[in-house]
Length: 130
Image (cartoon, rainbow, N blue to C red; front, top):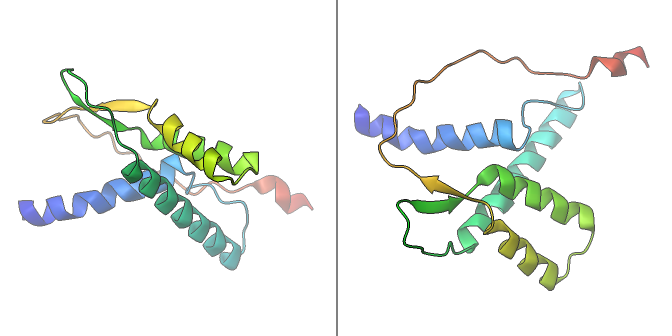
């Protein structure tokens, strides 16, 4: 059972990143097909961010912990990249070098208490008045 649960843990953390770091909880429409379209856009963004994190090399230092690139900050860097409208190769290389500035330590063996709270889907009710 323990082994099966650990196989599922990567999927759980991926959905957490998709929901909270990429904003997959708040939708901008009420129709199902537009919500699907937003979800597919979030999936594409998740894949792009994770591939760019995998392509970056984290510098090795003589510190206490190993480090990894922070996913949430990588999402912010990607959003800035899309807003710049400069899709040149140099801009993409700059994006990859900017990712290395946002590192978080990997702390093995940490056990934090999980505070679970039910979260509802947030819609935008101001559009109903139109």
